[in-house]
Amino acid sequence: MQIRENLKRLKARKINFKKIPESPGVYIFWLDSTPIYIGKAINLRNRLRSYFLINLAPKTRRMIAGAGELSFIRVNSELESLLLEARLIRKYQPRYNSAAKDDKHPLYIRITKEEYPRVITARKIEAKSPNLAFFGPFPSSSSVASVLKMLRRIFPYSDHKLGKKACLYSHIGLCNPCPSVINQERDAKIKKNLLQNYRKNIRLVKGVLSGKFSNVKKALYGEMLLKSKNEEFEKAELIKEQIDRLGYITQRVIPSQAFLQNPNLSVDLINKEIKDLRTLLVNCKLKIVNLSRIECFDVAHLAGTSPTASMVTFINGEADKSLYRHFRIRQEKGADDISSLREVAKRRAKHFGSWGSPDLIMVDGGKTQVSAFCEVLKEINIPNISNIPVVGLAKKFETLIIPVTKGKKLTFIERKVAKGSVLNLVQRMRNEAHRFARRYHHHLIRKSLIPFS
Image 1 (cartoon, rainbow, N blue to C red):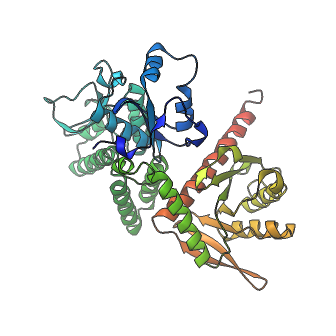
Image 2: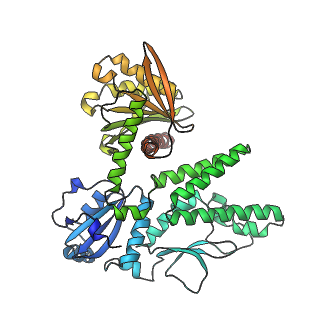
Image 3: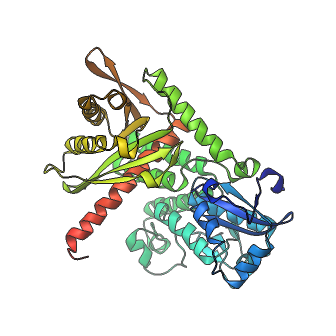
């Protein structure tokens, strides 16, 4: 497939960086109709802006001087950008992606075809060696390391040959079960179960690297339900953690090919998310004018110590980090999430003029959390403020908690969010609020442990 006709092209020396999104993606520098460099970025705007600084390396300066146009493709996660970048480099072999052509660098990810398959790096496709799969080339060894680091924390695997004892990584859960341990096991039944678990992890790694995120999640979800049905709750919880981690690094499930066919796909999907969320809320009798600005709140603490809260803001479905806020909980009852949330709501209410006003507020929690926020807004008794709709997202079954006023009584509609556009949006906001709250919480804990840091 030729991608040039599907991509919007910008003049390389007349770029309005404000119109470039601060999101993950892949960018392409063009010389006429030929890609001369393909790269990936966690933040497209910042990465592309860096190419037009004064102090550039000679090779980069030559590339920019020769490039007449550039394009970018937005994706939804760092992992998607890495995989799409590798796919495009392999297809077009751009002149300035020299690292991808240099056998001195480990540019591929290889899954060996052995009794205990290993996930390793390779300099080139080795036709003589049996392989389950090859992925790449990646433009640098750091890209390969980044992919493997993310995946190994979710699906532990081995990168070593068999030994007489467990490897170092097995002690920190990154090679689990360790093939060396499996191979030494004398009980045939135990050995068989361990080998099945190990090969399952390899299949899941292969599935993710192939871009089959949906299939991997579906398989994990089915296994989790089975473990729960058999009352193996600890095992079910471990699988739930894998699903959550995979969901965090992949966000929405979209094949790389779709981004090539429609470079505006990410914007289209965000617009659909907002539209579908509005439809859902309106159908639940919640008064929604628009959803241009949504704020999400979360509270974090450890047994009541160093309690914090976060406010993350999404404008037109995308995170605007300039509008994020941290709150250090001041009350003594730091372990009381409801009291903490009431405090945050009151402090937020003081800044509706200076920070701006949201179209919707979402809190991480259920009925009590939603009630707490609603009560504070009503106490303010300012029409434009007290009427701001508030919803909650309960982690159990990912249920939206929607308050409805009947007379003077506040009742709730509980709507389990099905897989799709609405779940993608609300989970993305909730996960970001959780991440931001925990970051500040960890910062306060470090300060308490090291007072002079």
